[in-house]
Length: 236
Picture 1 (cartoon, rainbow, N blue to C red):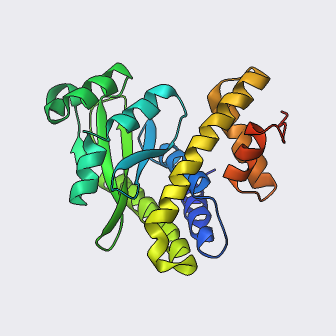
Picture 2: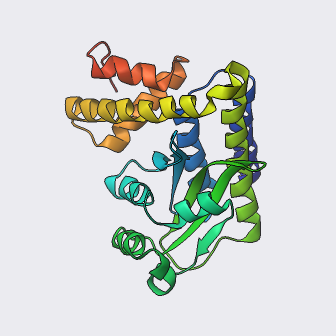
């Protein structure tokens, strides 16, 4: 598949949410996967704000603990937090040399094998609801074209989330974002249950949940709830 086709598919996938109901967690997971597929990055993670304005890990291109740990660490420091607070992109092309502004994050990122990071705001106008973190295992930064694509993908996802909330109840955006964040906890539990039951890693368990939900047009959290409470057994 050509890169142009991949780009078309990515934007079609995101904009499709503007005309139908969708699962926020699934949408944002797909966004991180598309970033790794389309851009010169090795991993991507997304932080979303709760009702108190604190950043919470929401999605990652890999469900590995190292990536989620890096996202969680940015609650207190990191490029994602700075990006969210300022509403501006944040770049560090070499965490070994320039990560002193986030010592704990820089150390953890390097330990996980990541050397460079780019954080982009998830915003619509002046409203910022989160940050997209793009990580590389080599020094350097994204090209201007790749940055433009990444920000465009993040913008479309942000519009989709805010659009859905506005259609349902304009004043409920923060509360509904919190509900989406809470559903993440349920999904984590379902991953663990499925991984233990089928003797697979959590990456494969999460992929199975997503595939099952999408193929049957179900909400991801509904599938996760059924798995956790023993009402559904997802087979290979």
